[in-house]
Length: 288
Ligand SMILES: Cc1cc2nc3c(=O)[nH]c(=O)nc-3n(C[C@H](O)[C@H](O)[C@H](O)COP(=O)(O)OP(=O)(O)OC[C@H]3O[C@@H](n4cnc5c(N)ncnc54)[C@H](O)[C@@H]3O)c2cc1C
Image (cartoon, rainbow, N blue to C red; front, side):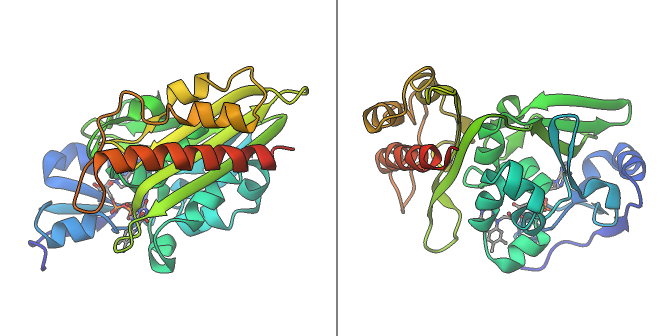
């Protein structure tokens, strides 16, 4: 339960963090809130020789709206998202997701960027960023690249981040029109992580039909995913109870489901379908 010896540097800027990463390569690890990395180090699952702390880089912590986009710095804590007035107004899905995440200590220290970079299959943020069709800005020594959330989660604890890259920002278009959102989670009773978590983001057209749908799913497979077949089953339709139930049946289509001592793959699939229906019903009831 004691980590292997390591050095520690608090980077003062993103550029400094990038050049430290370039210099120390695989020997170094970025430290954000430490709520996933430090437990892994204590279990000696990770043994970095150097921790590069991003915590002092103020430029990486913000929530703002600019040019029709909501922008969130990677070092923004779960608590800052939970309590952001801007997000409560323009994208309540994110504060609602944060409220469901961990406990107060975790929310005070853990960051959205750390959670996304870690890509735990039962983490909450991946479902939410998928549902709002977010893009992620990855900084590297040569500049930046932008990747869709749908392409970022590659496999269990594996993302599209390349060696030497730092996740800098998460952004997405500010929703317009009649938008309804909801996050619904079945918690594991011991860890509090998602056995299943569903993020729903619907836009209705003026006649009340579903114009666009984003459904992010976590906990079910090795990585979070968008339930594309369920989304397609909603588009252009009136979101009545029958349509929502029929769409929700597709929540785990084509997904190899996780199975463990607590929940079999079959049970997770069933939960995904039930939770998707309920999340969609709540999202529709909130669309105004
Ligand atoms: C008791 C407990 C309960 C929890 N419950 C939940 C829960 O219910 N739901 C949930 O989703 N999570 C939960 N978590 C995890 C929590 O959300 C963590 O905050 C999150 O997983 C990691 O974020 P962090 O900022 O702590 O990152 P860290 O632990 O510091 O880093 C995690 C990984 O990401 C890398 N990294 C960090 N920042 C960046 C960056 N900007 N660019 C590139 N790589 C980066 C690090 O090198 C490391 O490999 C829980 C944690 C604990 C300890």
